[in-house]
Length: 163
Image (cartoon, rainbow, N blue to C red; front, side):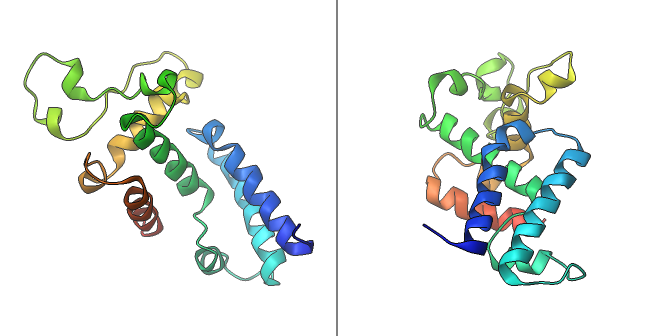
């Protein structure tokens, strides 16, 4: 069992990771509070001062900032849905645009997903909406169907680090 700062680090990461599905589309105020927790955990482990910038420290740990971490987890879940590695009830929300329309559109073969319309803010934050939105925001080379999960995760993390 880890002791001291390492334990704090694991608890902070676990807290942030366990809430990722709830953080999709969350307000910037909530994300800011989680960013403070993430930064405090990194400071505790490294002994960094409060005045020091945390971006280099987080990169050293290979931690994505909270917003990108949420994007990463959502995109990986969508990938798993598209490759039948996720539960069926989630897979039904990841519908390619090519299967929805009867017309021939350029976007039909772009690897994009259909984003359903909603009437509430809660609906906008659901996986049914956030999953396709996140997936459609990725570059085309990440949305190719022949990429493995390990390669996808690696390239996605690299892409998100450079945002």
